Length: 515
Image (cartoon, rainbow, N blue to C red; front, top):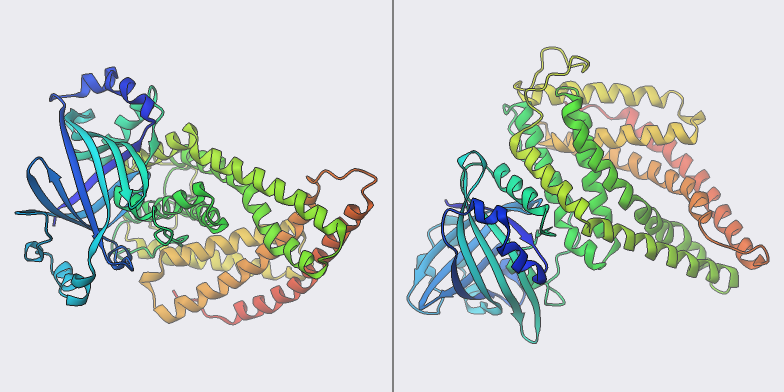
């Protein structure tokens, strides 16, 4: 089964000439550029059944020849697209299902009802300039510069992107080339394929906010290989929500990007027990920066929906509440705009490329850290299940200690408990496939409930801080009163939540470890 590995990069149309004059591109080229005009027709049902199955089907014309291509599976992270691809020449501009050889695809397209409903849903028309590049360490890649548009009915979107398809070597070499090119060209990682951008032209073609996908780990794989698989999964989770977040469709996209960052940071914390903390430090620093850029927007989103909204619903005619809501909406909008600027920045693009290069090179290996405390007998090459079991048991014991003083815990102590609960939940989710399904799910649900309750308590503590950002003049008595009403509501909610925490903790104490 052929698997296509390519890095996609978007660039402004007015930078194309600068790219073509780039000394790096010229010095790396080992063939002259060849120009093609490509026209593609993408097929799906009116209900987008192929999209739901993660399959893209197209016919592409180059000159007088037509090629049928099916893409599916794989992943996208930091602009690196790895997908299974099946191509076959066809005589005319008609789908030919006899050309399909993959058993899973044969089964999918065997349904006569599906075939009957297939129709063109959008097209792409672009000019492609192709050349071969010599990468570092003798790797090779096909460099494609595509300029044109994707069209769906009366709607269209421009295409101006680079595709670096790996021919030999490793994906890290693609990232290194892109990082060098970034010094002179304002590149953006392109996580959406042309097919995905075609679907985005339809009102119902947008992908909903996506939660983390399950991770398929083998119990006997090394600790190092497991860390890499988990990290790519976290990046995939992050980038799957990036397009929706930048478009401002739904606050849940930002939330899922924040969750992805927390999962990746938790993975660094988990595996720092084995690998050098110094090797993780640059990555941890960049993830911390990005989390700080997204944090205020998420805090305001939660405050608006979880704290302020019910107060507004209960006092719809209070003039101070309405005025306060308007000011809070403006602040929420400003913070969300700042989060989007961060995700669109050169800093973000460079960080994601560096992270992709770091993961591809497995840069955490070979850097022993004498200060790290490793579980007895467990190293980078040890079976990951042995490590997972020891870690889950260790974190579980940590949690039990917090529970001894739960009723008298301060806000800071509850926040620290929330972090430990969160890390234990992510650890359990990362390694869930190794253990009995039912018991593992019950434990994760318990962790999730504790995390939600502690999160609600943290949101209550944040309310006073966020309201401190609202500018209210001394004579705006009704708005001052509104602030007091919101804080009172928040305090009442905090008291109820503390009771919920005690009940949830009692349930946690009864649950048996699944490992």
